[in-house]
Length: 500
Ligand SMILES: Cc1cc2nc3c(=O)[nH]c(=O)nc-3n(C[C@H](O)[C@H](O)[C@H](O)COP(=O)(O)OP(=O)(O)OC[C@H]3O[C@@H](n4cnc5c(N)ncnc54)[C@H](O)[C@@H]3O)c2cc1C
Image (cartoon, rainbow, N blue to C red; front, side, top):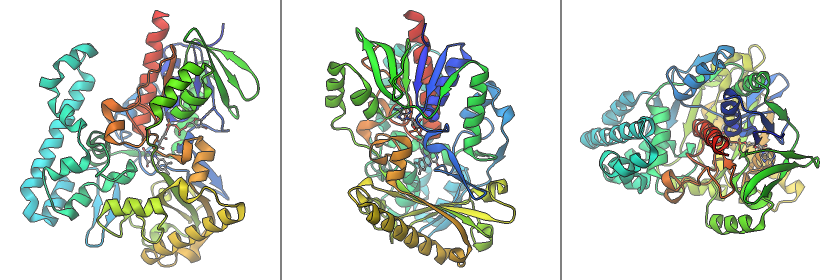
């Protein structure tokens, strides 16, 4: 009778929760609005060029990485070809230009060389964050009951507690007042969409470790290949998939999950539901029970969504390397002040906003026709810069903003304009259309202190049998975060099904 679990959405969180349940022999149905899996992490093809819709680099996929180990355990990695990455990114500031290579010691050395007067402060900062990482690992992997961990936290996990209450800027200012050093140490703010003056030190540091402490890998054929293989493997294990189908309602009975209703009018019974859709849709729209909905409307009303993104996908007649793109990721900043950088993104100042360039074909030449190249040009952007436009205004603005960004990149890579064979543009409205995320939020709830760590929206809900997975919930955005979220949602459902 019915499914053990219906998973709403085949984004990263949804797919890993479904895989966890499938590994444990549960009867699962995944319902996905789009035609393909992956959510905002999917790939698309134009005239022989394969483009990553969003991903630049995913941490924890290198040897011994957490995701890599799980993919090995589940046999998925055997059907995937990993390409080890040498470097993370070339980072450009008005007076600094360096390569981050996944190695904290090398990064530290570069910083000490560039800021000799700050040597001691830099060393102390790295010691402090290493202490935090050690405690974090102990907290996650100590095989003792959760309540006991909480009880002993003030003694054994004091760093986690302290850092959880700080913004990343609070933490950095405990070590240095040098604005350029602060800017470089917080360069990864773009990966969480919030400058360090506002972002949680806790979440920032987890992302920082992801990209600065261990090498990672790309997946040949694009990250979409991973999701295709996962779907294939799960189908072999009996998981059912309905693509091109939306869940429009979650039906409860006496406070428990009963079923979901799709846009095709089908009611599907389930003992539990994991929603990978946005927390807003799940808790304030899909739920049939008004009393639950009203409570969540109240609870979520002060929560803040993350920023969105504007992206230009270029298929080139030559490899981008030939034009001067000598690393697969470039990060370009016109100023050291990330609060200003954030404002440029929020207000749509496309002449000044920071740019992220990614040349996936440099990593995997098979993504483009032989001898050709590709380039992804991305900036963070706000939905408000794009809503309320007429169709004609929207199309004209899309072209204009793409032109501005390409011309900025042309200064670094002369000949770029002449080499463009294919051009696709995605705005915050496109992100919303493909993920349903309100206002095209790319990182779920913004990683503010009040919305991170212990304060992140729980995966458990007030409805028995309903759980959340993905960027909106614990631990937070990014593929690695959503992978953890998916596995944990699966574990929560396994526990729930045991006691039911
Ligand atoms: C431009 C950009 C760049 C990024 N770069 C990186 C990067 O370099 N590295 C990194 O780690 N992360 C990056 N991220 C973040 C990362 O992609 C996301 O955090 C992660 O993929 C989100 O996964 P999710 O599980 O929250 O699901 P989502 O991707 O949000 O997918 C949710 C899925 O649910 C489906 N859905 C929604 N509502 C319904 C419904 N009612 N019925 C059925 N299906 C529904 C949607 O169609 C979608 O497929 C980037 C994101 C963006 C947008």
